[in-house]
Amino acid sequence: MKKKLILPVALVATFAIAFWGCEPTGEDEFCEQFTVIEDVAPQCEIPAVCCPDDGSECYIQANDQTKYMCTGTSSNSCEDAIDLYVDAKCTSKVTAEQRAQIIQEMNHFTAVLMARVRENSICL
Image 1 (tube, rainbow, N blue to C red):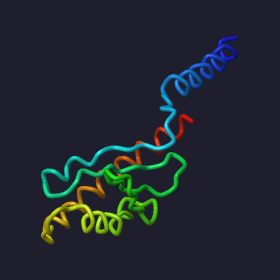
Image 2: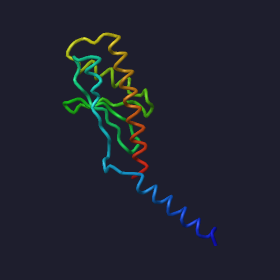
Image 3: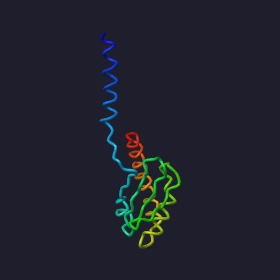
Image 4: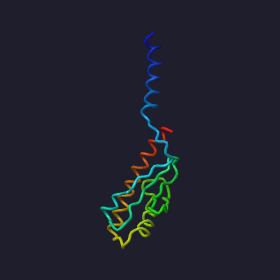
């Protein structure tokens, strides 16, 4: 008798965790401002990094809505887009050291955002 009762309770608990543990955002993509750029290179505009929840490529979006597309879905796939963004949206020359730090910080930022998008896409 106890065995027959345990299975339904376990199934109900599993579904409860799946439905209440997951809060869908209703967003088609997730965007966050990359404010770290102010600390590294204050002469650059603050971009947003956006990742669609359908698994397609992330992109960097400037304040004027220009999109600089990443070239894949790995954490370092935005390096070309970052270079293009820095060349276009920094008001003065960025040193090689600043550029390397921007790339490193933005790659990390994008990887964290990608992980959150994957986590949230399970809820959809």
